[in-house]
Each structure stands twice: as C-alpha cells, then as structure tokens.
Length: 153
Length: 108
Image 1 (tube, chains in turn blue, cyan):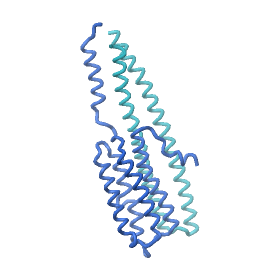
Image 2: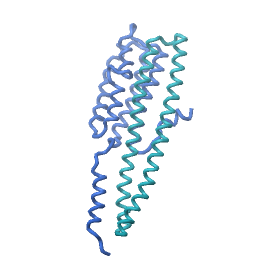
Image 3: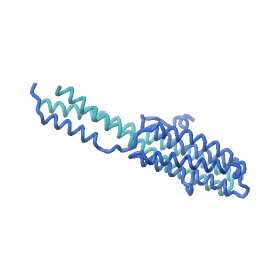
C-alpha cells in the first residue's frame, strides 16, 4: 500500500500540537487530597474547642495554621494549579472570612471563648469550604458529584 | 486522497460525540451544583436570621457567618470553574487518542 509521507507529518503535527499545549489545570494529587481531608478533620476538631478558653489551645491553633500553610504551599507549587491555590488562600488567610476570622474571634473575644451556637454554625461553613477543595481535587481525577448528600436531603 | 478524507471524517464524527458529551455534562453539573449551593445558602441564612431574632447569636456572629458564606460562594465558583477545566482537559486527552486511533484504523 502506498503511503503519503505528508499524511504522517500531518497526523504527527496534529497530535503533537494537541499534546504540547500546557495543561489547563494541575493534575490530581493524592498528597493534596489527603492534606485537605486530614486538615478538615483537625480544623473542625479544634473549632469544637472554641467554647473553652483560647489560651488553653493557643499552641494548637498556631500549629494548625503552620500545617494549612504547608498544604497551601504544596498546592501552589504544582504547575497550572492556580485555582486550587486560590481556594486554599481564601480558606486560610489570617485576615480572611473563614479560618482567619473564626480563630481571630476566638483569640480576641472578651472571655476568650465563643458561643456554642455560633461555633456549630461556623463549623458548617468551614466544613463546606474544605469540601470545595476536596471536590475540585477529586474532579481532577475523574468526574465526581460532590454534593450528593445535600441534594438528597 | 480518499483515505485522508476518511481520516478527517472519522476524527470529525468522533470529536463531535466527545464535544457533545463534554458540554452536556458540564452544563448539567454546573447548573445542578449551583442550585444545590444556593438552596443550602438560603436555608442557612433563614436559620441564622431566626437564631439572631431569638438572641442565640449576636449581630457580630450573624455578620461573620454571612461573610463566611460569601467567601464560601467564591470558593464554590472556583470549584465549578476548575471542574469545567478538568473536563476540557479530559476532552483533550480523548481527542488525542481519537486522532491516533483513527489514523491507525484508516492508514495502517
């Protein structure tokens, strides 16, 4: 069978062109996924203690911020991963409205304790924020429906 | 030349199916996710308003919760955008496979 060399060049060029483009989003990372799930559990467990005096848990809070910043730096270092990095940044920034706000209020409240009702409600927001990060990471691997639990309720 | 036309037609047909799936999947899941998020946000805001009225939380608590929800909405929008990009990335990989497979089928 006679083969035209230009056809091979064309196919090769097309495949190379498609393959050579930079990825639109960073690849799935098992480490990033595990960091998000374990830090979610740690954050919620520590938030539960916000009805106790802050000074008793000050070191744990500082350690938690070290750990979440490590997770953020890991995600930020993955190429084409700016969307996941932005999510972490919103969640953990000290002057932000999620983790930063909650732990700052605990530290600065007059009796160094927070109201249990407020703690429980805010924990829901922190939990959902981690779930957004976890959902995006899972979807990098395969299409995954993340809000099945809420949708069923 | 006929073989080349077969190749182009094969890629076109396959790519059309891939693209239709991609956009249908993206549209359905983005709409579904956003509706679920908004429904939950509405329920939460109603509950917080009741808690404020019952003095179980104060104005500062209420304001902080609303601000947290706003930050969460921003994170959710990023999830929707990132999930869409992940789908496009998978589409690109499938398209590369399609071009290679069709070429093997037609020319070899």
